[in-house]
Length: 191
Image (cartoon, rainbow, N blue to C red; front, side, top):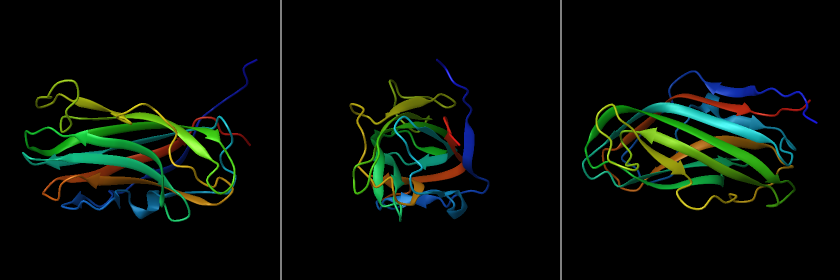
């Protein structure tokens, strides 16, 4: 029997995150005020959260790859969802838009590394090569992850956590990514 349900925005970013440029070090791309603190025992089996983000990206003619991941933990140190390395468009792009949507469903809860999340999503931009190389105004879509869907790294759902979005460039060059809009929604809150 269906029950009543609603969704709730848990946090949103109202200022730009810092641009990540010329670095192969995994780095948060969110503004500090958008890093969501979760209380202990926030997750239950079946809980679904959705992260959406939009921004701008610039690439060079030898762009390499871009990897996005969602991290949780006391210091956002646990990769609970990894999108895999995206192949970028070899046509240089300057400040073109991108859009990301990522769904995470709790599959297990517990202490130590017992908790985990199944995750799937998309990253869309003319800066990424999807099924064909996109032209100006067109967009390629990269599936997150770029391999068989699987749960991410286990984490302790009984502890407080910070939810964060990280990016990693595969090549240290003039590529740049910046987040302008971001939010996390709880698709089935319970009180």
